[in-house]
Image (cartoon, rainbow, N blue to C red; front, top):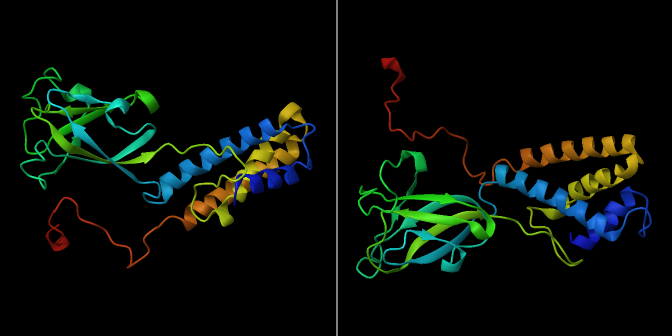
Length: 238
């Protein structure tokens, strides 16, 4: 399912094969709005479908890292962070870093002693090209590849007719994009509000159905409750 297919399907819904009331630019804009909406639903439901990985170098005395330091542009959500402050000495010495809120740091961020515990800490701020990662404690030496990050990226818009939608099972679910795009186009000048409302209702129902079908990416074994607190599960003691 490529962009050209979605354009054709959208124009079928609005009953306009060639541009007249709706330009190609308008159709593409609404398709991308609907695509981004669907992609974020996939992020919510389909476990780590878009998961990406990046590695960066630690620089002595440098606390914050951005796009010029190798941090990917377009980080939407950070999923996991691992740090190794001395790769040259211990290549396997990576530790999971835990996120920390600015307000929980009682000392200055750049204090080398802040966060001196078994696991390091990190904080983030900004978005897209301004996205920054801060390390606690501050590196005291160069550590090549000492920063590892798993993250959910921002999904790029489709542009050319051969671009494909980055969603699971697009042949099944990409129709939601065309239906929602057509609904918003029909609202231009209040041309077909009744039809537009029906299309939106159908698109919402299809989206909810998609989320139910994608709920478990790993369907191996039955469902279970995982004890993450290691508490006593002998309920006879209650």
